[in-house]
Length: 115
Length: 116
Image 1 (cartoon, rainbow over the protein chains, first blue to last red):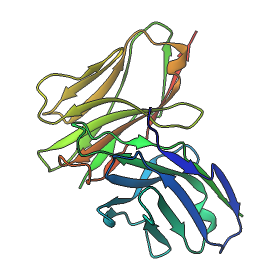
Image 2 (image 1 turned 90 degrees about the vertical axis):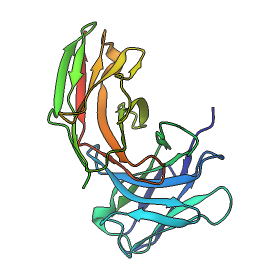
Image 3 (image 1 turned 120 degrees about the vertical axis):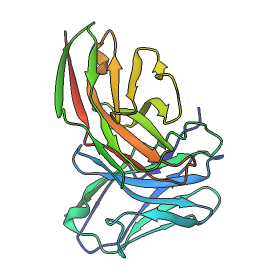
């Protein structure tokens, strides 16, 4: 069964460093998302991406964040200068417009620890 | 603005009994979708069930059913015949609009504990 894959599964970084989280969405999906979850709490929307541009972004998604689809398969989230409060689990998700329900297919997450 | 509310931080249920997890929502869009996701301790997010705002009947998927009361803006999840493996965090979620481009927002979650 097709799945969303994310790398790395866990990254530890120093405050102020740049981090890139990578995702490979399901191949025939057209809509891509990043969410974050701090310590098993609420799943927070960061950004949605369609047709090579951002569809919508939340207040969390400030100038320190960016997304890119550098090729036909990868979807990346970059945090330019990490802060302690960026420590969280980051989930990539994708969905297909052909699905009547439009449920999100999530990757297993990338845990980011900022020291 | 979209809003999802789950008022039960934690719930306990005896194995083999049914349990209802509450969810209320708020939206001004007449077209929306409601979802429930399960997050076990391993951390992955698992889609359980979907209800469209125009669906006349309550959605069912195996032991899961969604009690959709549109006028009250509630979308409660009912799990019948609870199993130990149902112990997990459950998130109610909503997406406005019909296309996948619209964001899906999540409630705060309810942690379900199934007792043997």
